Structures are given as structure tokens and as C-alpha cells.
Image 1 (tube, each protein chain N blue to C red):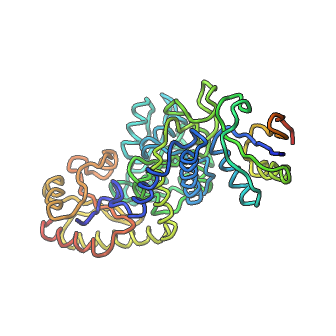
Image 2: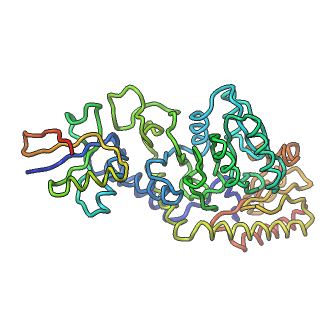
Image 3: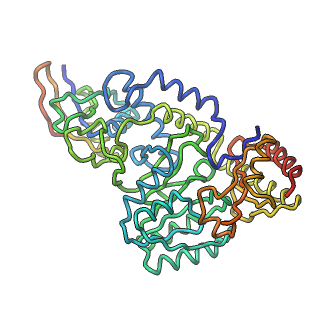
Length: 84
Length: 366
């Protein structure tokens, strides 16, 4: 179980990110950000697999889509923030 | 009924627009407020409409703020740029949505360009006003009374050269003339969703070349612990629940326009309005017509214009009489006391509609 969560300030930003990744053929899932990941309270995130995370983050930066943080979930209890 | 009041709203709405709006009422919950399927369906519907508008007006989806109407958009734009005491240049053809907002905020206005259909005069006066120290500009693209298409590309360039912020009111042009936020370099472009863009009433759009100051404060579904409105677009300008069903209808309106082609719609409207003006003149009417005219035409009958409008209504012709919420435009044209009768066309207006109107106009007489 290795998932990454890219968190965004708003649903619109997350949707923009989703579109960019979809166009590049990177599968991701748009959902609410787990409460503890979002210190400002309420946000949206993209959940995606491990294989193309660096590429995905590169595309978001290239398109100037602002995201907040990236988290890696390795099992049901272990989630950590990562810098890419 | 022959509907020639498209300047007020598009009517009737296309069947697919009605279906899209109705469908959203049973498919969509509150967008950006939850993660369940109906909320996500709503968010997708709203975002698709944003994308469609962004493609049409050459900007990113997040630069598209949904409002209730063009007046709402203009208020947000003007309040974001100007402060009481500022002097702002406007043209002689502005709607009350612009003039009342500026007046209400205590912003001084310099009116530049009062000659109908005269680009040279408009540009000369506009440039002079900019040179004399105006803090910004707010101008219409097309007069809602006379259909005068202003030289907005040149006016925008004059503002850009001087670093003067400006707002474009595209109430009557959106859906009939192609527009690019990027090319114009406007700070804001305001437009209704329910006129040329064929969406339901209660929809408006503000295209943002920069950030906005919110008109309303409240929930956005994000950054809930932040006591201020979020800084980013479009959420900063969209407090409270969106009009999702209407936005879904607007999205379908945008798709219809893309299929037909905006340029084609504008050309047809221009041809029909020219023909109508010429024929009305042959009937002895005093018609306001000229070059750079799109989709809208005003004339002054000998009888009271409201009485004329009522007579036409009884004959099955829907048009509009009076001052059309634009006393400044009437002052510029010298029709403030009489008002005018206005016909305005839309994407589905055909030659047969104009002929029906002309037959009725011949019957009633000038």
C-alpha cells in the first residue's frame, strides 16, 4: 500500500491539477483532504500511486498549479509528509 | 410571439440548456462542500463550465468567477480597482450597472466619446481623458441601446500603454464577438451568463486578469479556519453556495455557441440589423444606425415609445421601450427625454422574425 496525496487549497485548484495529470495519462483520484492533513481546515487532494509521483509533481509545477503539501501513505497508520 | 428583446435576456432558452439545468437539480448537491458523489458531480459540472468559458475567452478556468449577473460582476471589478475620490474615464454609452456603481462609491467620472458609431471621436476623446490623469477606465463593448460596437481593442491598448487599469463591460457582446482576456490585457471583463451565452437568468461571469476584492464574505468549502476569504481565485470571489443548476445550463449554452461559432452568430446579427434599419427608414422611422453596429437598434416613433411598445406587444412582437437602464447613452444620442424603442437580436433570430416585425411596424406607422 503506497499512495501519495497532493493537497490543494481549493477544489478548483485540485480540479485543475486533476485535468493536467489526466491529460498526461497519470491516474489520480480527487477527494476531500483527510482532516489532519489540512491545517487550514477543509481542502481537496489528489490521491495517486507511487510510480509516477515525481513526474506528476513536475507537471503541476510546469503548469503553475499551486499545491500545498505531499504526503506518502505506506500503510493504514503510517503517513508522512514528503518533499519532492 | 416574435422575440426581439435579446438584449434583456436570451429567450426562450434552448431545450438542451433547460435539460442540463433540470438534470443538475437531481444529480448535483453542493459543489466543493463534500466528498460524496452528488457533491463531486456538482463540482465537476461547475468546473466543466469554467473550462468552457476559459476556452472561449482565452483564460484559465480559475480566472472565471461565477456571479449572479453582469451587474454583480461589474460591482466586484470596480470595487477591486477603484476607491472613493478616484477619477475614472467612461464612455458616453455606459449602462447604470457601471454609472450607478461608480456614483455610489463616490468615484468621479470623466465621460469620453459621445458620438454614436464614430470610432475616431471615441478614440480621440478616450485618449485625451487618459492623458488628463484618470486613474482607470470602465467601458462597454457594445451599447445596449444603440448596438454601437466600441473600438475596445484600441481602447485597451491605450490603457495598457499607460499602465492604466480597466474593466470591460461585455454585457451585449459576449456570445456575438470573440473576446480574449489575454489579448485585451483587461484587469476584468464582466458579462452576463443569460444573454448571448444562452444560460439561465441568475448567472453572471467575471473574468479576472488579477485578484479580486470580495463583495460577499462567507463559506467557500476550503480553508475554513482562515478568518479571511481565501486569497486564490475563483474562491475569493465566490462566497456561498453556487447556482449549480443554472451554471450547468450555462455550460450547455457555451457548448451550443462553440458548435455554431461566435463569429458566425455576430455576422448574422450584423446583417439582419442593417437590413432592419434600412427597411425601417424606408417606412419613415427615425432610426439610429451606422457602421460598427451589432444586434441592437433603436428608433424613435412619433407616438410615446412605451405606447408603441405596448401596441407591438399586442401584435405579438416583444421589444423594449424606454431608457433601457442607460440614461447616459440616451443623453449622448439626444433621446433622454423621449427614450427609444429598441429591438435586439440573438443567435436564433432569423430573417422571418425581422420581416414579421417590419410588417407590424408598417401597420403601426412611424
